Image 1 (tube, rainbow, N blue to C red):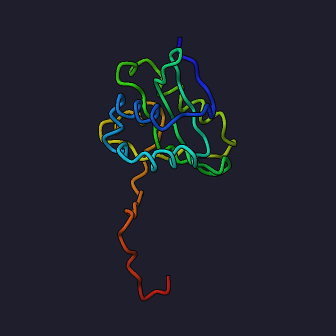
Image 2: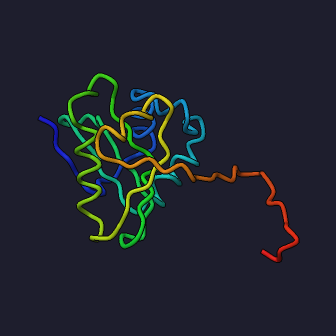
Length: 142
C-alpha cells in the first residue's frame, strides 16, 4: 500500500536513488551531493510516496503558498508508474496550497504529454535564463 507524506525528511542518497529509478536523474545533478542536499533543504514543500520504507515518488516544490508553486521535481520510480502515484503527489501538493495558488512546471521531454492529460494547461511563454548566461542590457532602461 502506498502512503503519502508532507515534508517527510529525505536524505540526499534516498532522493538520488529515486531520481535514478525514475529517469529524472538524467536531468538533475545527481553526481553533486551538495547540490542535491541544497535542493532538499531549500524546497518549501516536499510530498513523498512510500511503499513501506521504500521511497517510490516525490513532488518537490518551491512556493509562496499563495500565488505560485513551482513544481520542480515530480519523480516516480519507473516500476511504479501508471498507478496514479504522480497524480496523487500533485493532488497532495495542491492541497497544501492556497485557493488561488497555481502550480507551474517545466515538463521533462518524455512527460510532455502527461500533464495535459491530467488537467494542466499548456503555457507557451516560458523563459529560462541558464546559470552562467549573462543578461543582455537594453537601451530601454529595463
